[in-house]
Image (tube, rainbow, N blue to C red; front, side, top):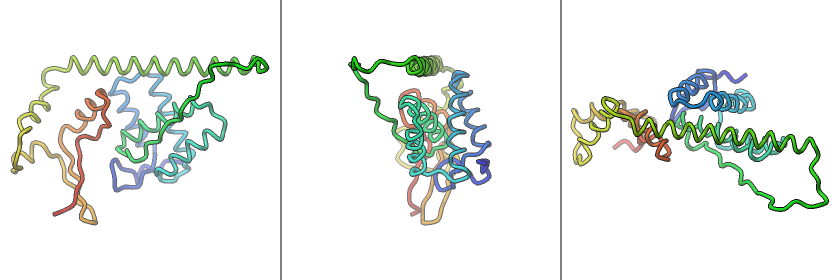
Length: 226
């Protein structure tokens, strides 16, 4: 019901549908980042859940928020809702749909338990399962971060050539044809006198930005046609 990939596109200015083509590209991206198999499976499952709920509609910020609210209304635990929101936000970030990212819920912890309120066996099992799932997700995220950080520290040789190319032009005051050919991959012109500049080495910039805590999409910029 949600295979509308023919109208999709990364970045701005396009309808934002979630189809199998986008999910396959997202899975490839996660594997390239050496994410844990369990993390990849969960992210894809949660994004598919969002796509199924959209039922063919193009996603926007309002629908993304409504999906989170629907999960809360359905009785999902806050930690579960947050984990699904994180998966969707990772997909939005990969698609460069940064404006769609949704805030996670604030978790409130009860420091004391009322003596009149004893946990049933079912409640205990559910809480234990939720705790185990959250612990596993945290451990997977920590291992993934450590692996990415290790790769970043060990990144040598030809994989750092793009950094050398960028540093050659760090004090650039004018742009000529040769420099543009090296630094710029594509320039897109849209209606309304808006342009989008896509730089070379964009994937490398996004990778380093994600490991260092940035928002990604460092390789593109927008402006007005002059």
